[in-house]
Amino acid sequence: MLDPLFGFASMDKVWSDAARLQRMLDFEAALARAEAGCGVIPAAAAQAIAAKCNVALIDAGALAQETALSLNPAIPLVKQLTALVANNDAEAARYVHWGATSQDANDTGLVLQIRDALDLIEADLAFLCGALIELAQKHRSTPIAGRTLMQHALPTTFGVKVAGWLAAINRHRRRFDETRKRALVLQFGGAVGTLAALREKGLSVAEALAAELSLALPEISWHTQRDRVAEIATTLGLLAGTLGKMARDISLHMQTEISELFEPAVEGRGGSSTMPHKRNPVTAAVVLAAATRVPGLVSTMLSAMVQEDERGLGNWHAEWETLPEIFRLTGGALHHMLEIMPHLEVDTARMRHNLDATQGLIFAEAVSMALGNHLGKAAAHKLVEEASQDARKTGRHLRVVTERLSSQEIDKLFSPENYLGAAEQLADRVIAAGRKQV
Image (cartoon, rainbow, N blue to C red; front, side, top):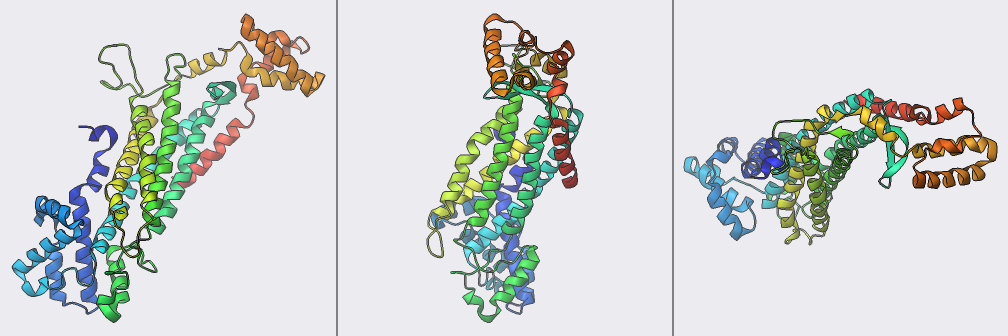
């Protein structure tokens, strides 16, 4: 019931039981072809094995029950595959899973799933980058109240705020590109990582197997060296955090008292069962839920790195449901964010209105700097600080402290466009960097 809320169909499919088993079968088929190519097993046997490496032929229910006994889905999977091959070719069945260990099938199948999932993540990141570029460009000069510690600070532009989101997404895209190179590698080591069962052909088979699966060949087996999968988890965790930051900003700006941003108006989205007027930040809530859950799961993956000798006991098994859930939650959050960002509603008039909400106090620094030219920095700061306190108590506008300045200077000081610093140039720099990656 909750799958469509926190995930999305394509990512769920990548991490389905059927996909897990098929990717393990893909390993078995590629192993047979690689060994045949290296003269380890007969070519006819490889063909017979590959012909049966189809998840539709597997009894998933029986496999699940046997997994509970064997502690490893590869063991009953190889058993079923062997029986399927034997039904047609008893001689070929002798060569199923030849020289491999169950973790080879599990881990290489996992790497193939990770590759499929990263394709989805990276495609959505590219689309999100494009949407953010467009939004930042459109609002590079749109004044908005900058807020620190939840209070008005100084004027900035909405384009700068979006550019901050975009800059993080740009970094994540580079991270995933780098992580992909390190993580998408073959796992093939045999019982203890030495490929002893294949004797002098072990390294040749490993090279051929990596080529069959279009995976990089690592320098050594990594059965209990889990930094690669932990890196995937932490990289996803970083992305979830950035998406959560974006969702937090959007939800804060959807508050009734602020009302500067709104998720797209869609029939049935964001309503209340009792309050007809409500327009709730539902997508932001989903993304924030993911950003809340993912760090704990990442912690599990980091804890699972500490494994025993050549095969982990329990800690390896702790990864099996954890990493797919990290992908599902982070991928779902990204996909949902992508659905709203191109259609995010921006109320520029409300942004302008809110700049005046504090009776000019948001321009206190600008006034202090201007007065500093006449009084010195310390004296000017003290004067404006006292005037700001008085303005808060009396409701008077901060303009009252500016009798030492001309009316032209006053008008300029209390115009947000005149105190944006390098905002537009900063937004342009991030936009340009994003366009290079699109």
